[in-house]
Every structure is written in structure tokens, then in C-alpha cells.
Length: 284
Image (cartoon, rainbow, N blue to C red):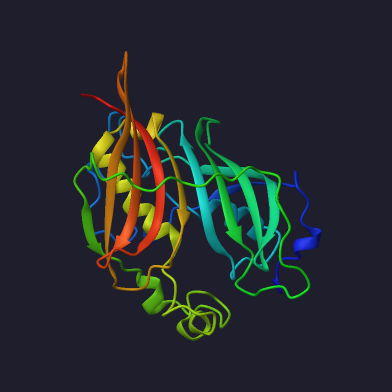
């Protein structure tokens, strides 16, 4: 049971925001040495724009954190629909509402749907963040169903695989930031909950995925892209991980070929950490 967010007091349809979102360098780069040039130089829309999944997994946590202490939360699942690119020279704002809450295996979950817009009111993206309120389990109840139909994400089909991407997962904050003792980003606390070490933040993994799908689909992913993912097993500092994706569907349209990809992030031994699907328009 969360000590900081009272699950019983959370009410579906509660609204949050609007909040101004800051520019944070570590969220922007996700510790990657090189970014697509549309984020640092010119883009098809003029100047540089934010990565499509900037602050991925953090938006719902920002909103609930405006009312409660959210330091112990852990992302579980995410859905995102891209609408427009976000100009890095314009302020970003976020608003949303609680759309679900449930208990699974004694753990408390909540889901927040949010809309990111810029200072001109231009809609940037819509997101639903599912997250654990903490890693502390309730002993008074085990299950309580939510309102949303959370369907199982299909496993990757290897037959039409596209080029994978391998990297060493790294989050500078795990080495430098003084997280609170009951944070999943602290080694001792994470180990007490059965993990090998501190958990790498979800926004870092979303940064890797954003870069991967932007490179595959091109700039159109910032205006027509969609993604849904589930966190299956924690990623830890300096683990070797690989993003693998396979084309599940193709459909020709006037503006290109719309493709659906199944993907996963896996370790070198094949253990799956994250799996999901992504949609976008291919120019060829």
C-alpha cells in the first residue's frame, strides 16, 4: 500500500493541470550521445523539435505528482498518439484526468490520460500512463478490477524483422542523484522487492524507442505515430539491451504505406523487458 498516494481517495474523472512542462536535458537526450538532427538543428517544420516521446512515462506521474508525492511510483504501461511536433522554443503544457484505478496481486495501480499542448494551444500528443503507486503490496485485498479493457500485447513475430538496435542501457541519475530510500531507483530498496538492482527509468527506454521509430518511419512519426507498450521485466544500469521489431501489417495510403510493427526490448539471453506495438507511415 502506498504511503504517499491514498488509493482510496483517487477518484476516476479527477482532473489535473494544466502544468507547464520544463525543458530537462536528461529527458531530452535520454543519455544518448547523438540525436536525430531534427532535434538539434533544422526540421521539416523549421527549427528543432522535441523527440516524439519526450518525458515518456513521466507525464501521468507529473500530473499526479502535482497533488501527491509520486517519488515511489513505477510505470507499468503506456499508450501514446502523436499529433504534432513540439517546437523546443515554445512552452509546453499538460493537463489530464484519472481514467482508471485497480489492484492486481496486491499492488495499487492508476491510469491518467493526458494532453500535451504548446503555448499556442497546438495539440502535441495524447497519452495514457498506467503506473504502480508504489512497490508496497496491500495485505487486505489482492484484486480489484479496473474500468478499462487492458488487452494483452501480442508477442513479436520474427518473420519480417527489421534491423535491430543494440546499446548499453545507462541513466546518469542512477549514479549521481540522491533518490529517497524507498525509491525503485535505489539498489537496496529494489533488491528488497526482489529486483537485481535499481530500476532504470522508463523515460530512458522510451527515449531509445523514440529514436528507433523516428529513424524507421522518418519525421512523419511525430505527426502520425502511435505506440503502446508494457513493461515486463526491469532494465538495470549498464545492461546490454536490444530493440527488435517486426512488420505485422502494411497498408498503402495516399500519403505512403501505413505499417504496424510489433517490438520488444530484450536482454542478450532473450529475456523480454518491454514489448508493444508501434504504428506509422512509411514514405516508401
